[in-house]
Length: 53
Image 1 (cartoon, rainbow, N blue to C red):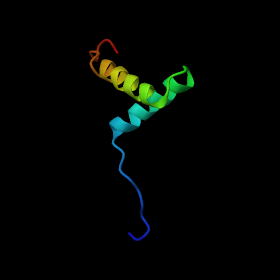
Image 2: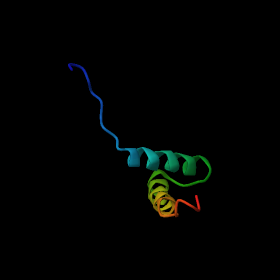
Image 3: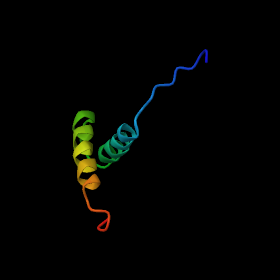
């Protein structure tokens, strides 16, 4: 596998990035604040019972 420089990014980190990017595009949040808020948002979403989602 010469020349393969791929870096593993977990599914959770991909979800955080997706939410953080949405937060930044729709607010005046900076990178750090958006990522921090994204982790809180995902935590809340992940703890909503399946029946409610």
